[in-house]
Amino acid sequence: MIMMMKFYTFTFLICLFSKLQGHCKSDISLGNSLTLTSPLEYTPGFMGKAYIMETESSSTREPGFKAALTMESSDKDDGRYLCSLQIFLGDVRVWSSGHYSKMYVSSKCIIELTKDGDLRLKSSNKHVGWRSGTSGQDVERLEIQSTGNLVLVDAKNLIKWQSFNFPTDVMLSGQKLDVATQLTSFPNDSTLFYSFEVLRDKIALFLNLNKLKYSYWEYKPIEKNTTVNFVRLGLKGLDLFDDNSHRIGRIEQPLIRFLALGNRTGNLGLYSYKPEKGKFEATFQAVSDTCDLPVACKPYGICTFSKSCSCIKVVSNGDCSSINVEEAVSVKRLCDHEMVELNGVTTVLRNGTQVRNISKERCEELCKKDCECGAASYSVSGESCVMYGIVMGVKQIERVSGLSYMVKIPKGVRLSDEKPNVRKWVVGLVGGIDGFVILLLLSGFAFYFIRKRRKSLSLPPPPPLPQQPANTDS
Image (tube, rainbow, N blue to C red; front, side, top):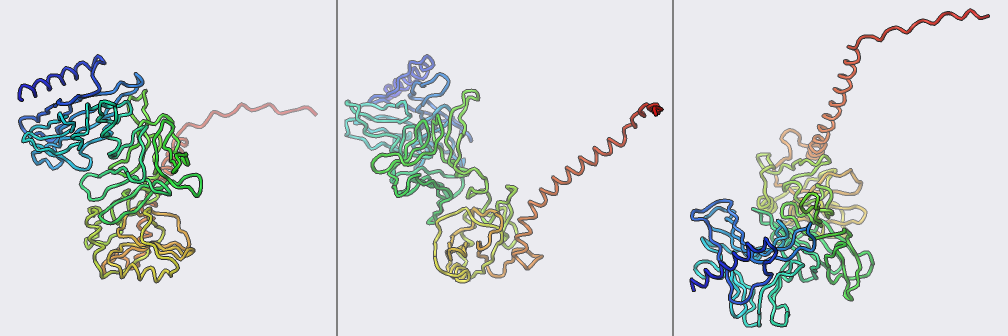
């Protein structure tokens, strides 16, 4: 068995080197395995990558797809390594077996396609951390298609398992998502996550936190009274289809290679390859304004006109910069609250708990009595009250008559130690930041003109013009 393992590893290395000549096979047959070994001493930031197959690029100017076995040091630096099977488009990771369930090993990461057709990731002690679940399904080989889809096929080339059925945070050209699937993205060191979902009436981006779920961007079909069945990414953009597979909408962008949901901002982008730059760039982003992102500022922060973050000071020490999502959720669990209205602000979060045909005072009372309510928005025109479980995605807007945004704070906590009028304090703080920026700009212009005037005064006077002889003609 040991000799067999060494043989297969050597075969892989031959394939790895020969691919430089364009001869690497794009499939692996039954019984093959590969071992990736970590450094002798634990190395923070380590990234080991061994390519096992690749596709030929459709263009010499654009990268193709590669499947790789990878080992990465743990984010916690606990002496372990993350073991996963991944797919890359150039240098961009577009799929990972460890997207939802991570597998950690101490020294060795092993991938094997067993003789009964099951693709597995194992550790040195033979623990199986991930598997395709295709044992006994007549699988013959593992292939990577020109679309980047990693597949297990039988002798008739029928697909028994494919990575396209297990989307992560990237959607590739040619891939489709129906109402039962979604893209997800997980920020580091946070309990929240983002999702891109296909609904019957639209596609939308969502912020997810425990049981809380709020959308912050959506796109509906152009045709009315139609339902969405699935979406597909093509070379011309993202297409929406109905139950009869008729296209009912499109976000048009040419030459798209993939769609990605960012794990830091939660923004959705369509990416094309730029040969002159040698990299992929987003040619479309769902959210174009920074302040329209749910995490443009920390919880209890306000994204201002100048794209800076103000703060709703609800903590005792008056410092909001260190509030994280978990602390923001704990604030809302206080049931003895007061409500304060913030003028000139709103939230980008949608589809909170909505109650219609009530007054503003009743809306305030409902949120105050609900221990799960952290903020509420009210519209006079629709007599509509929307309640939210967390104070996030708050941004400054021009004042609109009839629109209100109210935040719940613990009793006895003032938003300012100097001004008891919280409404004036919040408006002054939000406006003050933008005013300071404007003041800097005006000061710069004034300094420029004063300096220019002083420079002109310091120049010597121009020589006198020659006098014209008096006209003596009568």
